[in-house]
Length: 218
Image (cartoon, helix red, strand yellow):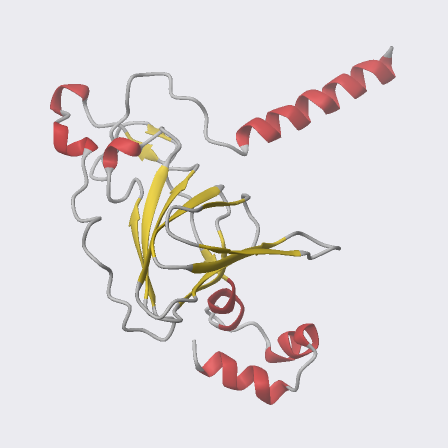
């Protein structure tokens, strides 16, 4: 009997942890984020604006039709529409981005720790892919064209590259109001303070001077 109770408790705890790993369903019509409110209780990280003061603009965002500036080393620009830009997304568990790519531009390998992403190509052609977790580390990749859709599972490293001669545009939806992004190169070589170059040299099996040069770029 004691063993059954312990097993049941362990299962219940595991299910609770799993449930807490994803955004809960809202318990009200909406909870417009109010970043200026430091008094009221926070719902999923954001306090709710008083329903009496909610306006249509709280649920609207303008500017996704404007091309992003791709004049940077990666040749891409992400324009997010998350809870920071659209307060009405608070507690709703969704967001989106526009991604612009210069010819041969990349959206470098990165992960979204809190969201699955589904991407639609609006213009151009993109080589996209993601890598499965250890120990297989399988690369799953495909070239997409206008109108094609691809999904990147939550937490997995993924990327896109413009393989056309003109600009490319994609729109992506994410299953979190605040999906987060961890760009792998920035996180590894641009951390503050630096990860020890000795550690990175051993992890990447390269000379320490190579790591020093990479860290100097981020």
